[in-house]
Every structure is written in C-alpha cells, then in structure tokens.
Length: 193
Image (cartoon, rainbow, N blue to C red; front, side, top):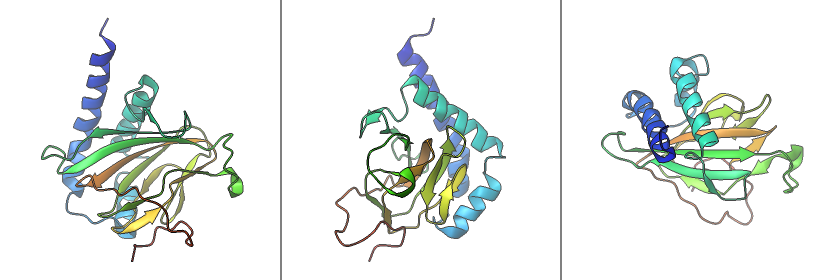
C-alpha cells in the first residue's frame, strides 16, 4: 500500500505535469472574452486536456490534497497546488471548491458567494461541475462546464449556483488580491479603476 502523502504528491504532480503543456500554449495570452472563447473551443469539456485535468482535480478534492483549506466550513475551500515558477511558465495553479446547496447567505436563486478578490493580471479558470446544473459565474455569465477568463484588473465575488463546483484556476505570476469589497458597489467582473 502506498502511503497517503505519497499518493497526494503523485496526484498533485500528475495535475501539474498535465497543465504544463497547456500553460506553454497560453503563456502569452491575455485573459478576457476573446481568450475565454478560445479556451472553450480548444480546451472545453470535449477536450482530452479538460477531461484529464477535471478528473485529476476532482480526485484531489476527494483525496484531500486539492481545495483542502476551509474558508467557510466544508462548502468553500481553497488550496494552492503550484506556486508560480519557471516550470509552470510563472502561473500559479489553485483549486477552489464551492457548494451553493443549503447556504444561508440569502442571495437570489440560492447562489453562494465566496471571498471578494481582484485579478491584477487576469485569470484562466476551468470550471468543473460536480452535479448536474452546478455552475460558476464568470464575466460572460454562468458556466456549467468549461472556462471563464476574467480580464486583468477585474474584481468580483466568486459565485456558485445549483450545487458544487471546482474551479481550477491559473494566475499569471500568481497574482490575486484579496481585500475588502467597495461598500457601494455590486460585484463585477469589470476592470478596476
């Protein structure tokens, strides 16, 4: 029997190794609507890349090495899988688990809102629904399975609806900014002023 830590290391390494050719391909792209369209056409749920990354990160969540740091109990968890490095073309890789079922936030449609943040250099975000109808809100609307690509300078509350999703996101230079939301402003994916 393989020790659990070795299994976790092997799973994490397999995910990183699978992501490297993808990161080589997107390293000079800028997040935004055009890139989001390209990601969904070239790397969407029909692709081998999406299916393999989805399987690896879903197994990682089940095994406890991905999205294993609780932010709001078991319904909102996050973990960094890889720091930005030459190997990852200076992208970080992070997994987030969000489950809108049974939350008490009181948002329309039972949506669940996570931690407000900004994307100084943008974000490439692969969405993996864990049950039918589960979706993550992106700059171009709700995404049940596929990709969102918030542009550099965008900011928002991540939102899930319809159940549990995993977001596997890739950040240029690992840049993400967690700070208080503006008081008089609703969540947006628009570039920050």
